[in-house]
Length: 602
Image (cartoon, one colour):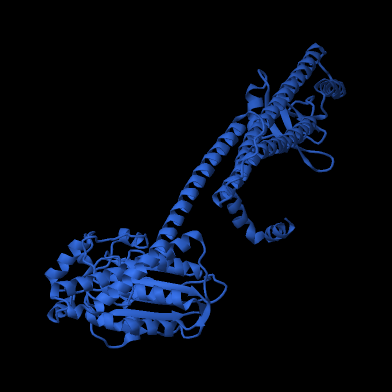
Protein backbone atom coordinates (compact mmCIF):
# COMPACT_ATOMS: atom_id res chain seq x y z
CA UNK A 1 0.00 0.00 0.00
CA UNK A 2 1.46 3.40 -0.90
CA UNK A 3 0.37 4.93 2.38
CA UNK A 4 2.20 2.27 4.39
CA UNK A 5 5.27 2.18 2.16
CA UNK A 6 5.88 5.93 2.35
CA UNK A 7 6.71 6.05 6.10
CA UNK A 8 8.99 3.00 5.79
CA UNK A 9 10.83 4.57 2.85
CA UNK A 10 11.14 7.85 4.74
CA UNK A 11 12.59 6.00 7.75
CA UNK A 12 15.43 4.61 5.59
CA UNK A 13 16.36 8.09 4.35
CA UNK A 14 17.87 9.04 7.70
CA UNK A 15 21.16 7.21 8.38
CA UNK A 16 20.56 7.54 12.12
CA UNK A 17 17.65 5.10 11.88
CA UNK A 18 19.58 2.44 9.97
CA UNK A 19 20.92 0.48 12.97
CA UNK A 20 17.46 0.25 14.54
CA UNK A 21 15.86 -0.69 11.22
CA UNK A 22 18.50 -3.34 10.52
CA UNK A 23 18.07 -4.77 14.01
CA UNK A 24 14.31 -4.86 13.47
CA UNK A 25 14.76 -6.69 10.17
CA UNK A 26 17.20 -9.11 11.80
CA UNK A 27 14.77 -10.03 14.58
CA UNK A 28 11.58 -10.10 12.49
CA UNK A 29 12.58 -11.40 9.04
CA UNK A 30 13.82 -14.96 8.60
CA UNK A 31 14.42 -14.23 4.91
CA UNK A 32 16.65 -11.21 5.67
CA UNK A 33 18.53 -13.11 8.38
CA UNK A 34 19.15 -16.14 6.14
CA UNK A 35 20.26 -14.05 3.15
CA UNK A 36 22.56 -11.92 5.32
CA UNK A 37 24.23 -14.92 6.99
CA UNK A 38 24.61 -16.80 3.72
CA UNK A 39 25.97 -13.70 1.96
CA UNK A 40 28.52 -13.12 4.73
CA UNK A 41 29.68 -16.75 4.73
CA UNK A 42 29.84 -16.83 0.92
CA UNK A 43 31.78 -13.56 0.81
CA UNK A 44 34.25 -14.82 3.43
CA UNK A 45 34.72 -18.12 1.57
CA UNK A 46 35.22 -16.45 -1.81
CA UNK A 47 37.57 -13.85 -0.29
CA UNK A 48 39.74 -16.56 1.27
CA UNK A 49 39.74 -18.52 -2.01
CA UNK A 50 40.66 -15.43 -4.05
CA UNK A 51 43.46 -14.50 -1.64
CA UNK A 52 44.84 -18.02 -1.73
CA UNK A 53 44.72 -18.17 -5.53
CA UNK A 54 46.24 -14.68 -5.90
CA UNK A 55 49.14 -15.57 -3.58
CA UNK A 56 49.66 -18.91 -5.32
CA UNK A 57 49.68 -17.26 -8.75
CA UNK A 58 52.01 -14.51 -7.48
CA UNK A 59 54.46 -17.05 -6.09
CA UNK A 60 54.30 -19.14 -9.23
CA UNK A 61 54.94 -16.14 -11.48
CA UNK A 62 57.86 -15.04 -9.33
CA UNK A 63 59.43 -18.50 -9.17
CA UNK A 64 59.11 -19.01 -12.93
CA UNK A 65 60.62 -15.60 -13.61
CA UNK A 66 63.43 -16.23 -11.09
CA UNK A 67 64.31 -19.59 -12.65
CA UNK A 68 64.28 -18.00 -16.09
CA UNK A 69 66.51 -15.13 -14.94
CA UNK A 70 69.00 -17.46 -13.24
CA UNK A 71 69.12 -19.64 -16.33
CA UNK A 72 69.75 -16.68 -18.67
CA UNK A 73 72.39 -15.22 -16.36
CA UNK A 74 74.15 -18.58 -15.94
CA UNK A 75 74.25 -19.17 -19.70
CA UNK A 76 75.56 -15.65 -20.38
CA UNK A 77 78.33 -15.90 -17.77
CA UNK A 78 79.36 -19.38 -18.90
CA UNK A 79 79.58 -18.25 -22.52
CA UNK A 80 81.57 -15.14 -21.54
CA UNK A 81 83.90 -17.22 -19.40
CA UNK A 82 84.47 -19.61 -22.30
CA UNK A 83 85.23 -16.71 -24.62
CA UNK A 84 87.73 -15.19 -22.20
CA UNK A 85 89.42 -18.53 -21.58
CA UNK A 86 89.79 -19.17 -25.33
CA UNK A 87 91.17 -15.72 -26.12
CA UNK A 88 94.87 -14.93 -26.26
CA UNK A 89 96.24 -12.90 -23.42
CA UNK A 90 96.07 -9.24 -24.19
CA UNK A 91 99.43 -7.50 -24.33
CA UNK A 92 98.10 -3.98 -24.51
CA UNK A 93 95.35 -1.95 -22.90
CA UNK A 94 93.64 -1.54 -26.26
CA UNK A 95 93.45 -5.29 -26.83
CA UNK A 96 92.13 -5.82 -23.29
CA UNK A 97 89.52 -3.10 -23.72
CA UNK A 98 88.38 -4.57 -27.03
CA UNK A 99 88.12 -8.06 -25.54
CA UNK A 100 86.27 -6.75 -22.44
CA UNK A 101 83.78 -4.75 -24.52
CA UNK A 102 83.02 -7.76 -26.72
CA UNK A 103 82.53 -9.91 -23.62
CA UNK A 104 80.11 -7.41 -22.04
CA UNK A 105 78.12 -7.18 -25.28
CA UNK A 106 77.83 -10.96 -25.42
CA UNK A 107 76.69 -11.06 -21.79
CA UNK A 108 74.03 -8.40 -22.37
CA UNK A 109 72.81 -10.24 -25.46
CA UNK A 110 72.62 -13.65 -23.85
CA UNK A 111 71.33 -12.44 -20.44
CA UNK A 112 68.52 -10.43 -22.12
CA UNK A 113 69.08 -7.40 -19.87
CA UNK A 114 70.79 -4.01 -20.17
CA UNK A 115 71.30 -3.63 -16.42
CA UNK A 116 74.79 -5.04 -15.89
CA UNK A 117 77.53 -4.02 -13.49
CA UNK A 118 81.01 -5.40 -12.80
CA UNK A 119 83.51 -4.78 -10.02
CA UNK A 120 87.08 -6.14 -9.66
CA UNK A 121 87.49 -8.23 -6.56
CA UNK A 122 91.26 -8.06 -5.95
CA UNK A 123 92.71 -4.80 -4.68
CA UNK A 124 96.23 -5.35 -6.12
CA UNK A 125 96.63 -3.04 -9.11
CA UNK A 126 97.09 -4.61 -12.55
CA UNK A 127 97.99 -2.34 -15.47
CA UNK A 128 95.75 -4.16 -17.99
CA UNK A 129 92.76 -4.67 -15.62
CA UNK A 130 89.49 -3.33 -17.09
CA UNK A 131 87.83 -0.70 -14.89
CA UNK A 132 84.59 -1.26 -12.93
CA UNK A 133 81.51 -0.53 -14.98
CA UNK A 134 77.72 -0.14 -14.68
CA UNK A 135 75.32 -0.32 -17.66
CA UNK A 136 71.75 0.91 -17.73
CA UNK A 137 72.14 2.89 -14.52
CA UNK A 138 72.98 -0.10 -12.34
CA UNK A 139 75.48 1.24 -9.79
CA UNK A 140 77.32 -0.30 -6.88
CA UNK A 141 74.83 1.28 -4.44
CA UNK A 142 72.07 -0.96 -5.81
CA UNK A 143 73.90 -4.07 -4.61
CA UNK A 144 73.62 -4.86 -0.94
CA UNK A 145 76.83 -5.52 1.05
CA UNK A 146 75.59 -8.97 1.96
CA UNK A 147 75.16 -10.03 -1.65
CA UNK A 148 78.60 -8.64 -2.58
CA UNK A 149 80.20 -10.57 0.24
CA UNK A 150 78.55 -13.81 -0.88
CA UNK A 151 79.61 -13.27 -4.50
CA UNK A 152 83.19 -12.49 -3.48
CA UNK A 153 83.53 -15.56 -1.32
CA UNK A 154 81.51 -18.15 -3.26
CA UNK A 155 80.66 -16.53 -6.55
CA UNK A 156 82.93 -18.77 -8.55
CA UNK A 157 80.96 -21.85 -7.47
CA UNK A 158 77.31 -20.78 -7.63
CA UNK A 159 74.88 -17.95 -8.36
CA UNK A 160 73.45 -15.60 -5.78
CA UNK A 161 70.33 -13.47 -6.12
CA UNK A 162 68.14 -11.07 -4.21
CA UNK A 163 64.96 -9.04 -4.79
CA UNK A 164 65.47 -5.33 -5.34
CA UNK A 165 63.53 -2.27 -6.39
CA UNK A 166 64.33 -0.77 -9.81
CA UNK A 167 63.32 2.65 -11.10
CA UNK A 168 61.87 2.97 -14.58
CA UNK A 169 62.20 5.96 -16.90
CA UNK A 170 59.32 7.74 -15.13
CA UNK A 171 60.86 7.28 -11.71
CA UNK A 172 58.42 4.63 -10.54
CA UNK A 173 59.81 1.75 -8.49
CA UNK A 174 59.45 -1.69 -10.04
CA UNK A 175 60.09 -5.07 -8.48
CA UNK A 176 63.21 -6.79 -9.80
CA UNK A 177 65.77 -9.56 -9.30
CA UNK A 178 69.53 -9.00 -9.02
CA UNK A 179 71.79 -11.97 -9.91
CA UNK A 180 75.47 -12.02 -8.99
CA UNK A 181 78.40 -14.35 -9.69
CA UNK A 182 82.09 -14.21 -10.55
CA UNK A 183 83.70 -13.83 -13.95
CA UNK A 184 87.48 -14.54 -14.19
CA UNK A 185 89.55 -12.55 -16.66
CA UNK A 186 92.85 -14.31 -17.58
CA UNK A 187 95.86 -12.38 -16.46
CA UNK A 188 93.76 -9.91 -14.45
CA UNK A 189 91.68 -11.78 -11.86
CA UNK A 190 88.03 -12.27 -10.81
CA UNK A 191 85.24 -9.74 -11.20
CA UNK A 192 81.90 -9.45 -9.45
CA UNK A 193 79.29 -9.54 -12.22
CA UNK A 194 75.71 -8.41 -11.45
CA UNK A 195 72.70 -8.54 -13.78
CA UNK A 196 69.34 -6.96 -12.85
CA UNK A 197 65.98 -7.97 -14.29
CA UNK A 198 62.70 -6.11 -13.78
CA UNK A 199 59.37 -7.92 -13.16
CA UNK A 200 57.15 -5.43 -14.98
CA UNK A 201 55.50 -8.03 -17.21
CA UNK A 202 54.88 -10.34 -14.30
CA UNK A 203 53.42 -7.43 -12.29
CA UNK A 204 51.04 -6.63 -15.13
CA UNK A 205 50.06 -10.28 -15.43
CA UNK A 206 49.51 -10.51 -11.68
CA UNK A 207 47.41 -7.33 -11.65
CA UNK A 208 45.25 -8.67 -14.46
CA UNK A 209 44.80 -11.98 -12.66
CA UNK A 210 43.88 -10.26 -9.40
CA UNK A 211 41.33 -8.01 -11.11
CA UNK A 212 39.83 -11.05 -12.75
CA UNK A 213 39.73 -12.98 -9.48
CA UNK A 214 38.15 -10.17 -7.44
CA UNK A 215 35.67 -9.32 -10.18
CA UNK A 216 34.69 -12.97 -10.47
CA UNK A 217 34.40 -13.21 -6.67
CA UNK A 218 32.08 -10.21 -6.46
CA UNK A 219 30.03 -11.56 -9.35
CA UNK A 220 29.78 -14.96 -7.64
CA UNK A 221 28.59 -13.35 -4.39
CA UNK A 222 25.94 -11.37 -6.24
CA UNK A 223 24.82 -14.46 -8.15
CA UNK A 224 24.62 -16.48 -4.92
CA UNK A 225 22.61 -13.69 -3.24
CA UNK A 226 20.23 -13.48 -6.19
CA UNK A 227 19.73 -17.24 -6.30
CA UNK A 228 19.29 -17.39 -2.53
CA UNK A 229 16.78 -14.52 -2.61
CA UNK A 230 14.73 -16.31 -5.26
CA UNK A 231 14.84 -19.58 -3.32
CA UNK A 232 13.98 -17.91 0.00
CA UNK A 233 11.17 -15.98 -1.63
CA UNK A 234 9.75 -19.18 -3.08
CA UNK A 235 9.95 -20.77 0.39
CA UNK A 236 8.82 -17.76 2.41
CA UNK A 237 5.70 -16.95 0.38
CA UNK A 238 3.86 -20.10 1.61
CA UNK A 239 5.10 -19.42 5.14
CA UNK A 240 3.83 -15.82 5.00
CA UNK A 241 0.50 -17.06 3.64
CA UNK A 242 0.28 -19.61 6.45
CA UNK A 243 1.10 -16.91 9.03
CA UNK A 244 -1.54 -14.54 7.62
CA UNK A 245 -4.08 -17.35 7.49
CA UNK A 246 -3.32 -18.31 11.10
CA UNK A 247 -3.75 -14.69 12.20
CA UNK A 248 -7.12 -14.44 10.44
CA UNK A 249 -8.16 -17.77 11.94
CA UNK A 250 -7.16 -16.56 15.41
CA UNK A 251 -9.13 -13.34 14.80
CA UNK A 252 -12.30 -15.38 14.28
CA UNK A 253 -12.44 -15.94 10.51
CA UNK A 254 -13.08 -19.67 10.64
CA UNK A 255 -13.65 -19.97 6.88
CA UNK A 256 -10.15 -18.95 5.86
CA UNK A 257 -7.86 -21.65 4.43
CA UNK A 258 -4.35 -21.91 2.99
CA UNK A 259 -4.17 -22.28 -0.83
CA UNK A 260 -2.54 -25.63 -1.63
CA UNK A 261 -0.49 -26.19 -4.81
CA UNK A 262 1.44 -29.33 -5.73
CA UNK A 263 2.42 -32.36 -3.70
CA UNK A 264 5.59 -31.20 -1.92
CA UNK A 265 6.24 -30.72 1.81
CA UNK A 266 4.70 -27.23 1.85
CA UNK A 267 1.57 -28.57 0.18
CA UNK A 268 1.39 -31.31 2.82
CA UNK A 269 1.74 -28.66 5.53
CA UNK A 270 -1.06 -26.62 3.92
CA UNK A 271 -3.40 -29.61 3.77
CA UNK A 272 -2.64 -30.47 7.41
CA UNK A 273 -3.33 -26.87 8.45
CA UNK A 274 -6.60 -26.82 6.53
CA UNK A 275 -7.64 -30.09 8.13
CA UNK A 276 -6.86 -28.64 11.56
CA UNK A 277 -8.86 -25.49 10.70
CA UNK A 278 -11.82 -27.65 9.61
CA UNK A 279 -11.69 -29.54 12.89
CA UNK A 280 -11.47 -26.33 14.91
CA UNK A 281 -14.36 -24.79 13.00
CA UNK A 282 -16.48 -27.88 13.54
CA UNK A 283 -15.74 -28.02 17.27
CA UNK A 284 -16.29 -24.29 17.75
CA UNK A 285 -19.58 -24.55 15.90
CA UNK A 286 -20.64 -27.43 18.14
CA UNK A 287 -19.66 -25.45 21.24
CA UNK A 288 -21.48 -22.39 19.91
CA UNK A 289 -24.62 -24.43 19.30
CA UNK A 290 -24.36 -25.94 22.77
CA UNK A 291 -23.78 -22.52 24.32
CA UNK A 292 -26.77 -21.14 22.45
CA UNK A 293 -28.92 -23.99 23.76
CA UNK A 294 -27.69 -23.31 27.29
CA UNK A 295 -28.36 -19.58 26.96
CA UNK A 296 -31.87 -20.22 25.69
CA UNK A 297 -32.46 -22.72 28.45
CA UNK A 298 -31.33 -20.30 31.17
CA UNK A 299 -33.29 -17.43 29.62
CA UNK A 300 -36.44 -19.51 29.13
CA UNK A 301 -36.29 -21.03 32.60
CA UNK A 302 -35.67 -17.64 34.18
CA UNK A 303 -38.61 -16.11 32.36
CA UNK A 304 -40.87 -19.05 33.10
CA UNK A 305 -39.99 -18.88 36.80
CA UNK A 306 -40.73 -15.17 36.96
CA UNK A 307 -44.54 -15.55 37.10
CA UNK A 308 -44.78 -18.25 39.79
CA UNK A 309 -42.00 -16.55 41.74
CA UNK A 310 -43.94 -13.28 41.74
CA UNK A 311 -46.96 -15.11 43.16
CA UNK A 312 -44.83 -16.88 45.75
CA UNK A 313 -43.16 -13.63 46.82
CA UNK A 314 -46.51 -11.88 47.15
CA UNK A 315 -47.79 -14.69 49.35
CA UNK A 316 -44.53 -14.74 51.33
CA UNK A 317 -44.76 -10.98 51.88
CA UNK A 318 -48.31 -11.30 53.21
CA UNK A 319 -47.25 -14.07 55.57
CA UNK A 320 -44.14 -12.11 56.61
CA UNK A 321 -46.20 -8.99 57.35
CA UNK A 322 -48.50 -11.02 59.65
CA UNK A 323 -45.74 -13.02 61.38
CA UNK A 324 -46.55 -11.25 64.64
CA UNK A 325 -49.81 -13.20 64.82
CA UNK A 326 -48.00 -16.55 64.68
CA UNK A 327 -46.18 -18.51 67.30
CA UNK A 328 -42.39 -18.14 67.51
CA UNK A 329 -41.51 -21.13 65.31
CA UNK A 330 -44.00 -20.16 62.59
CA UNK A 331 -42.85 -16.52 62.69
CA UNK A 332 -39.24 -17.64 62.27
CA UNK A 333 -40.27 -19.83 59.33
CA UNK A 334 -42.06 -16.83 57.76
CA UNK A 335 -38.90 -14.73 58.07
CA UNK A 336 -36.75 -17.45 56.50
CA UNK A 337 -39.26 -17.92 53.69
CA UNK A 338 -39.31 -14.18 52.96
CA UNK A 339 -35.48 -13.97 52.94
CA UNK A 340 -34.96 -17.00 50.73
CA UNK A 341 -37.65 -15.93 48.24
CA UNK A 342 -35.90 -12.55 47.97
CA UNK A 343 -32.58 -14.31 47.44
CA UNK A 344 -34.12 -16.58 44.82
CA UNK A 345 -35.51 -13.55 42.99
CA UNK A 346 -32.04 -11.96 43.02
CA UNK A 347 -30.56 -15.14 41.59
CA UNK A 348 -33.11 -15.13 38.75
CA UNK A 349 -32.33 -11.47 38.05
CA UNK A 350 -28.59 -12.20 37.86
CA UNK A 351 -29.16 -15.23 35.64
CA UNK A 352 -31.22 -13.13 33.24
CA UNK A 353 -28.49 -10.48 33.19
CA UNK A 354 -25.82 -13.09 32.52
CA UNK A 355 -27.89 -14.58 29.71
CA UNK A 356 -28.16 -11.11 28.13
CA UNK A 357 -24.36 -10.75 28.25
CA UNK A 358 -23.90 -14.19 26.71
CA UNK A 359 -26.37 -13.34 23.95
CA UNK A 360 -24.71 -9.95 23.32
CA UNK A 361 -27.98 -8.08 23.75
CA UNK A 362 -26.91 -5.71 26.53
CA UNK A 363 -27.26 -1.99 25.75
CA UNK A 364 -25.94 0.99 27.69
CA UNK A 365 -28.16 3.90 28.66
CA UNK A 366 -25.57 6.66 28.78
CA UNK A 367 -25.99 9.78 30.85
CA UNK A 368 -23.55 12.53 31.82
CA UNK A 369 -22.89 11.58 35.46
CA UNK A 370 -20.40 12.62 38.11
CA UNK A 371 -18.67 9.51 39.36
CA UNK A 372 -17.73 11.17 42.65
CA UNK A 373 -21.35 12.10 43.42
CA UNK A 374 -22.62 8.68 42.34
CA UNK A 375 -20.03 6.90 44.53
CA UNK A 376 -20.92 9.11 47.48
CA UNK A 377 -24.63 8.28 47.06
CA UNK A 378 -23.89 4.54 46.97
CA UNK A 379 -21.67 4.84 50.03
CA UNK A 380 -24.42 6.61 51.98
CA UNK A 381 -26.94 3.95 50.97
CA UNK A 382 -24.62 1.25 52.31
CA UNK A 383 -23.70 3.02 55.54
CA UNK A 384 -26.44 1.33 57.58
CA UNK A 385 -25.32 -2.13 56.43
CA UNK A 386 -21.72 -1.19 57.28
CA UNK A 387 -22.72 -0.03 60.76
CA UNK A 388 -24.45 -3.38 61.36
CA UNK A 389 -21.08 -5.04 60.69
CA UNK A 390 -19.15 -2.54 62.78
CA UNK A 391 -17.40 -1.14 59.69
CA UNK A 392 -16.50 2.50 59.11
CA UNK A 393 -16.82 3.83 55.53
CA UNK A 394 -14.35 6.51 54.47
CA UNK A 395 -14.67 8.55 51.26
CA UNK A 396 -11.74 10.25 49.48
CA UNK A 397 -12.42 12.13 46.22
CA UNK A 398 -9.59 14.35 44.92
CA UNK A 399 -11.23 14.30 41.49
CA UNK A 400 -13.97 12.71 39.41
CA UNK A 401 -16.56 15.47 39.82
CA UNK A 402 -16.90 16.46 36.17
CA UNK A 403 -19.70 14.57 34.35
CA UNK A 404 -18.72 11.61 32.18
CA UNK A 405 -20.97 9.59 29.87
CA UNK A 406 -21.86 6.34 31.66
CA UNK A 407 -24.78 4.11 32.51
CA UNK A 408 -25.43 5.21 36.12
CA UNK A 409 -27.58 2.16 36.90
CA UNK A 410 -24.83 -0.28 35.96
CA UNK A 411 -22.04 1.71 37.63
CA UNK A 412 -24.17 1.98 40.77
CA UNK A 413 -24.63 -1.80 40.70
CA UNK A 414 -20.86 -2.31 40.40
CA UNK A 415 -20.13 -0.06 43.38
CA UNK A 416 -22.84 -1.64 45.54
CA UNK A 417 -21.40 -5.06 44.80
CA UNK A 418 -17.84 -3.97 45.59
CA UNK A 419 -18.90 -2.26 48.81
CA UNK A 420 -20.99 -5.26 49.85
CA UNK A 421 -18.04 -7.58 49.35
CA UNK A 422 -15.74 -5.20 51.23
CA UNK A 423 -18.16 -5.05 54.19
CA UNK A 424 -18.56 -8.83 54.16
CA UNK A 425 -14.83 -9.56 54.08
CA UNK A 426 -13.42 -6.44 55.74
CA UNK A 427 -13.26 -8.01 59.21
CA UNK A 428 -14.85 -4.90 60.73
CA UNK A 429 -12.00 -2.62 59.65
CA UNK A 430 -12.48 0.68 57.83
CA UNK A 431 -13.26 0.63 54.10
CA UNK A 432 -11.82 3.43 51.96
CA UNK A 433 -13.55 4.51 48.72
CA UNK A 434 -11.30 6.65 46.50
CA UNK A 435 -12.45 8.58 43.40
CA UNK A 436 -10.04 10.42 41.11
CA UNK A 437 -9.65 11.42 37.48
CA UNK A 438 -7.11 12.40 34.82
CA UNK A 439 -7.48 13.72 31.26
CA UNK A 440 -8.20 10.21 29.94
CA UNK A 441 -10.32 8.44 32.55
CA UNK A 442 -12.20 8.49 35.84
CA UNK A 443 -11.80 5.75 38.42
CA UNK A 444 -13.06 4.58 41.78
CA UNK A 445 -11.25 2.23 44.16
CA UNK A 446 -12.76 0.22 47.02
CA UNK A 447 -10.14 -0.86 49.57
CA UNK A 448 -10.75 -3.10 52.56
CA UNK A 449 -8.27 -4.33 55.17
CA UNK A 450 -9.68 -7.80 55.66
CA UNK A 451 -8.05 -11.18 55.23
CA UNK A 452 -7.27 -10.65 51.56
CA UNK A 453 -6.67 -13.36 48.99
CA UNK A 454 -3.76 -15.24 47.52
CA UNK A 455 -2.60 -14.50 43.97
CA UNK A 456 -4.23 -17.71 42.69
CA UNK A 457 -7.58 -16.76 44.27
CA UNK A 458 -7.38 -13.22 42.91
CA UNK A 459 -7.06 -14.58 39.37
CA UNK A 460 -10.37 -16.46 39.74
CA UNK A 461 -12.34 -13.88 41.68
CA UNK A 462 -14.38 -12.88 38.61
CA UNK A 463 -15.37 -16.46 37.72
CA UNK A 464 -19.04 -17.35 37.98
CA UNK A 465 -20.11 -19.10 41.21
CA UNK A 466 -16.50 -19.35 42.38
CA UNK A 467 -15.77 -19.22 46.14
CA UNK A 468 -12.33 -18.89 47.71
CA UNK A 469 -13.48 -20.11 51.13
CA UNK A 470 -16.52 -22.43 50.81
CA UNK A 471 -16.61 -22.90 54.60
CA UNK A 472 -17.16 -19.21 55.28
CA UNK A 473 -20.63 -18.36 56.58
CA UNK A 474 -22.76 -16.00 54.51
CA UNK A 475 -23.94 -12.80 56.13
CA UNK A 476 -25.22 -10.78 53.17
CA UNK A 477 -26.65 -13.48 50.95
CA UNK A 478 -25.61 -13.34 47.29
CA UNK A 479 -25.67 -15.42 44.11
CA UNK A 480 -22.02 -15.79 43.15
CA UNK A 481 -22.55 -13.80 39.94
CA UNK A 482 -22.05 -10.26 41.26
CA UNK A 483 -18.39 -9.74 40.31
CA UNK A 484 -18.86 -11.48 36.97
CA UNK A 485 -21.71 -9.11 36.12
CA UNK A 486 -19.67 -6.16 37.43
CA UNK A 487 -16.79 -7.09 35.14
CA UNK A 488 -19.19 -7.30 32.21
CA UNK A 489 -20.60 -3.86 33.04
CA UNK A 490 -17.09 -2.39 33.18
CA UNK A 491 -16.11 -3.89 29.82
CA UNK A 492 -19.38 -2.70 28.31
CA UNK A 493 -18.28 0.86 29.11
CA UNK A 494 -14.90 0.21 27.50
CA UNK A 495 -13.31 0.29 30.96
CA UNK A 496 -11.63 -2.15 33.31
CA UNK A 497 -12.29 -3.71 36.70
CA UNK A 498 -9.08 -4.92 38.34
CA UNK A 499 -8.25 -6.43 41.71
CA UNK A 500 -5.21 -6.34 43.97
CA UNK A 501 -5.14 -8.52 47.07
CA UNK A 502 -2.63 -9.81 49.58
CA UNK A 503 -3.13 -12.19 52.46
CA UNK A 504 -3.23 -10.23 55.68
CA UNK A 505 -3.27 -6.82 53.93
CA UNK A 506 -6.74 -6.72 52.40
CA UNK A 507 -8.13 -6.23 48.91
CA UNK A 508 -8.44 -3.30 46.52
CA UNK A 509 -10.82 -3.20 43.53
CA UNK A 510 -10.38 -0.40 40.97
CA UNK A 511 -13.04 0.46 38.38
CA UNK A 512 -11.71 2.65 35.55
CA UNK A 513 -13.98 4.25 32.93
CA UNK A 514 -12.85 6.19 29.84
CA UNK A 515 -13.85 9.83 29.50
CA UNK A 516 -14.67 9.56 25.80
CA UNK A 517 -14.76 7.22 22.77
CA UNK A 518 -15.25 4.14 24.96
CA UNK A 519 -11.49 3.48 25.03
CA UNK A 520 -8.79 3.84 27.66
CA UNK A 521 -5.70 5.67 26.40
CA UNK A 522 -3.66 5.90 29.57
CA UNK A 523 -3.15 4.65 33.13
CA UNK A 524 -5.88 4.64 35.73
CA UNK A 525 -5.96 7.72 37.98
CA UNK A 526 -6.41 5.40 40.98
CA UNK A 527 -3.43 3.03 41.37
CA UNK A 528 -4.30 -0.64 41.62
CA UNK A 529 -1.70 -1.39 44.27
CA UNK A 530 -2.63 0.98 47.10
CA UNK A 531 -0.13 3.35 48.64
CA UNK A 532 -0.59 3.88 52.37
CA UNK A 533 1.42 7.13 52.32
CA UNK A 534 -0.80 8.79 49.71
CA UNK A 535 -3.89 7.45 51.50
CA UNK A 536 -2.81 8.89 54.84
CA UNK A 537 -2.08 12.24 53.20
CA UNK A 538 -5.55 12.29 51.68
CA UNK A 539 -7.38 11.22 54.86
CA UNK A 540 -5.41 13.23 57.36
CA UNK A 541 -5.19 11.99 60.92
CA UNK A 542 -7.42 8.92 61.34
CA UNK A 543 -7.51 5.87 63.51
CA UNK A 544 -4.75 3.38 62.66
CA UNK A 545 -5.86 0.46 60.52
CA UNK A 546 -4.50 -2.79 61.95
CA UNK A 547 -3.14 -5.34 59.50
CA UNK A 548 -0.85 -8.30 59.91
CA UNK A 549 2.87 -8.05 59.30
CA UNK A 550 3.49 -9.30 55.72
CA UNK A 551 6.40 -11.40 56.99
CA UNK A 552 3.89 -13.40 59.07
CA UNK A 553 1.79 -14.41 56.08
CA UNK A 554 4.44 -15.06 53.44
CA UNK A 555 4.12 -18.82 53.90
CA UNK A 556 0.30 -18.86 54.20
CA UNK A 557 -1.78 -19.91 51.21
CA UNK A 558 -5.05 -20.69 52.95
CA UNK A 559 -7.69 -18.27 54.20
CA UNK A 560 -8.50 -20.52 57.15
CA UNK A 561 -4.87 -20.42 58.33
CA UNK A 562 -4.96 -16.64 58.10
CA UNK A 563 -8.16 -16.44 60.16
CA UNK A 564 -6.55 -18.58 62.88
CA UNK A 565 -3.50 -16.32 62.87
CA UNK A 566 -5.71 -13.24 63.27
CA UNK A 567 -7.42 -14.76 66.30
CA UNK A 568 -4.05 -15.61 67.89
CA UNK A 569 -2.76 -12.06 67.35
CA UNK A 570 -5.99 -10.53 68.72
CA UNK A 571 -6.78 -8.94 65.36
CA UNK A 572 -10.25 -10.45 65.12
CA UNK A 573 -13.15 -9.02 63.23
CA UNK A 574 -15.19 -6.40 65.00
CA UNK A 575 -18.89 -5.78 64.79
CA UNK A 576 -20.06 -9.38 64.88
CA UNK A 577 -19.85 -9.67 68.70
CA UNK A 578 -21.73 -6.44 69.10
CA UNK A 579 -24.37 -7.67 66.64
CA UNK A 580 -24.77 -10.79 68.75
CA UNK A 581 -25.12 -8.67 71.88
CA UNK A 582 -28.09 -6.93 70.25
CA UNK A 583 -29.58 -10.31 69.37
CA UNK A 584 -29.12 -9.77 65.60
CA UNK A 585 -28.44 -12.79 63.43
CA UNK A 586 -26.12 -11.81 60.55
CA UNK A 587 -27.92 -12.26 57.31
CA UNK A 588 -31.21 -12.93 59.05
CA UNK A 589 -32.99 -9.90 57.67
CA UNK A 590 -33.36 -8.70 54.10
CA UNK A 591 -31.85 -5.52 52.69
CA UNK A 592 -31.35 -3.89 49.32
CA UNK A 593 -27.58 -4.07 49.37
CA UNK A 594 -25.46 -6.07 46.92
CA UNK A 595 -25.58 -9.80 46.99
CA UNK A 596 -22.68 -12.09 47.98
CA UNK A 597 -22.19 -15.67 46.93
CA UNK A 598 -21.35 -16.64 50.47
CA UNK A 599 -17.76 -17.29 49.45
CA UNK A 600 -14.69 -15.11 49.35
CA UNK A 601 -15.91 -12.65 46.69
CA UNK A 602 -19.01 -12.61 44.47
